[in-house]
Length: 371
Length: 175
Image (cartoon, rainbow over all chains, first blue to last red; front, side):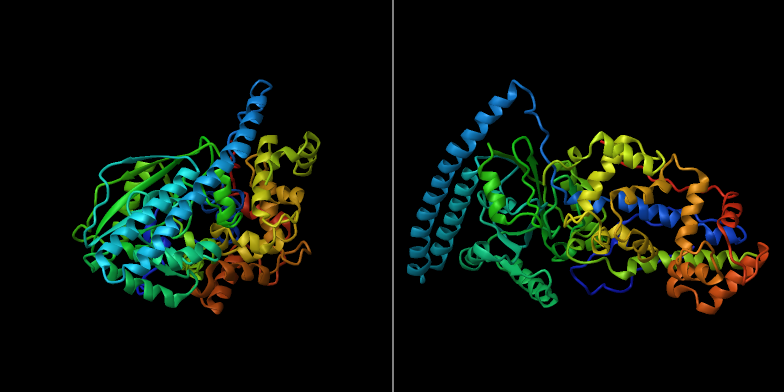
């Protein structure tokens, strides 16, 4: 039996190894003399390939699920039509007004606070925090967010990070409404990017670009600095690194689990009764996603603040990440899949293919020797 | 983004079923069609190599490049026919013939020593040296009563492979 150990890429902070997450060695090895039919029989490899073509767990993670049609019934259909009229003609304009008022209030307070209170850092920070929470409440109100928070509210203390599963950028708004977290986020283009670089920056949020390797180091450094600062806002990380459709969890990046801090898991589960909160960033921009939410009846979701976890003695950061993923998945009722969410943006490394080739080559050579 | 399954009529489904010798049920075909549309992101009516490679489980397969050449530019009907060898209703002969087609890259109905060597190279990569690969293959061919210069036809494949229990089945998820 050959033990395949992963030696490379240990330095690479952000790229988990799929193999580390999979249970090892379950396929039974064929034995006996090597015959022609063993070489010609491609069925295992072909079956795997066809299986992946027909259905694969990775694509499932990012599939937006269409709502169950309930309205195709002669009695319900007029009601549904009435609903459409109410939602688009009445609710939507009302929500736009609410959001506009929110922005006016927010901006007219934020800028004076930001620029006039330069000398009083503590007070300024507290006010800014309050204001960001306020604007997020307006956002939540603009989709009639019905959010149930369970468990104790997050507290501000050093050496802790919060990690949550990620479905849409609105997770951030939902959580921010309660506590002004500093968050690690992908840089976005357009108006979201503008908000990021002006307002959210004051909370100590950290931005990065997924595709830039250099950014990773910088983020890792900033992360450490932020966590050890006493007066910083609590840090929130979405370790999946990408939006998943709230049915699955993909692998957690280990970065958040290597900081030597207490990890506080947060589980978020959306109820899809009115709208699917998954932001399929390939298919729609964030603005269309928001519009979709604003024209629905309501966004219903549950947020659980779970028990803080610490690295157990002898546990690797990856095992720790998996343990926390377990906790979140169980609470939110999500299925775990052994895939790296970044595969949405890049191809899997040739290492995975080589691993398959290696095990096949070894089985051939071994059986050859058995003669 | 409409409901794609509604675009298949009963006639379409029957036509596809006929094309794949009824190896898939109607529900399975509807399911496959949804999957086909999902993979065909740009809606061109076929799935491009790039689109296939977005499925990581497929991309890591050692034979993916070779299969891509067979899958390239297939429309839905041909796509289902391609997959029909993996149906539980397909006969052993159909399955073996599919394997033969994978080997027979130039499609001349004969598989040579080099064809087999090519596949073996895909499957083992850098982990067996080229001369060793040739040695292994020559030896195994001779033990089975062939030589390095033999050209194998489908009948040979059936003879060789039908004695082993070929497990080549893929379940189409039906909801």
